[in-house]
Image (cartoon, rainbow, N blue to C red; front, side, top):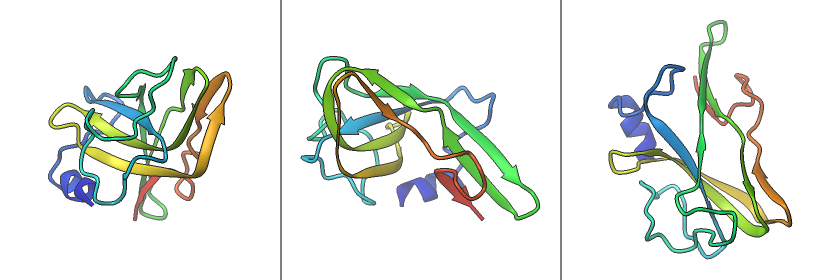
Length: 135
């Protein structure tokens, strides 16, 4: 919910020329992330702690597009991957700096485990499939 307000206040720039940096941090089932999560914090319980994972997560690059026919703006991000064996239940996408505001919380639905490379693969960047869509 805080993302919606900050978006309208102009706190986020998802354009191809943005100087803003975005990350995705992974969490175990011990985390309590939900629609009330307003920012990334290293103090939030449940962040993955394992070989191959660095606290704060991985850099991701946004891709903004507009479907002018249907009046939909949409945003997706590059996939993220970590070399390591660990388990995660969800993730937090956030902007680095300015209080590290949250963009969205992802719930994987169940624990996801990798024995070599953990990958978060985002949906297709289309007006019907992108992670974030505004109509």
